[in-house]
Length: 351
Image 1 (cartoon, rainbow, N blue to C red):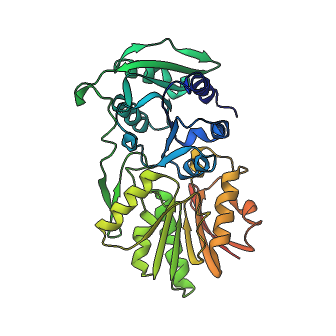
Image 2: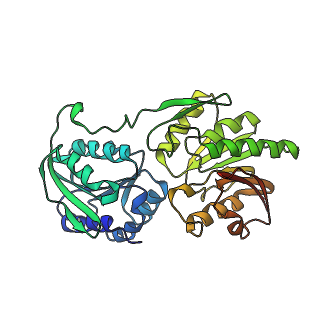
Image 3: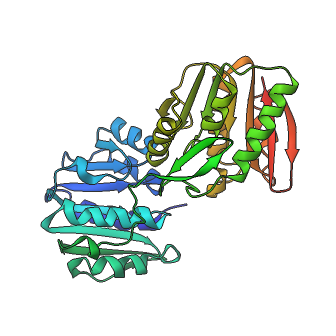
């Protein structure tokens, strides 16, 4: 489905790209707009907290940085036009807007866009207080955009509440593992029920079949609950990978706090990992609204099958209503339902 909010931003970028330096913050909403930057001028920089978007931008020849919403990689007050498609998470959007104040020139512009049901009008109202000049909201279908000019550089108290976005924090302990997380990670304040169920079922399966995991892959690791707990199974190696910069930063801190050595890799569903693993753990991000018929399902299952050793086992946990078994037949020869508690189900896949 076409993202009209992105199109509103892109139209503004086209008008202004030749007039100074542009910065585009590209989060998970920005996939469809990237090909339009194929002929972008050298004045454009992309910052993304998603590895796949960053990698695509680089392939297009666009200057790009992959980080956890950190605009300081460009010099302060050097951006004439900054573009933000509001994120699904409020703290991410607030953090990006706050950084815009320090990033754009003293007479620079920030363009903000999103949908009505995403709260664009509220974001626009809050952001307007941080700039001296605010244009009128431009509407296209149910999307709106606004141009804000000349940032007010004042005290920290005037910034939007970003829930201390950059601060890593201990959120608890699970089976002896200290868990560290932060805003920007899905479900960052909780111990995910599905992941906890996956750990329980995987350990029982491995013990029942007298299997000792040697190399574990945590595919879509988040802040690392699966990696930090499965380290107690004493494998020789754990590789954890995620597409989200915030998640990777949190897991690095978690590994340090638990005195663990993990290989932490920024990647899109582990597509660039070439090693084979006898044990694979995955709580895929299907909760983000993707259809079971969508490409995301295929991507995770395909990656799991390619990274699994000949006699290895891939453990997946998904919502009970998701029919992942049928899709998995294209990539695995056998599957076993380990549990279905009407909320989540855990499956073991083998080649």
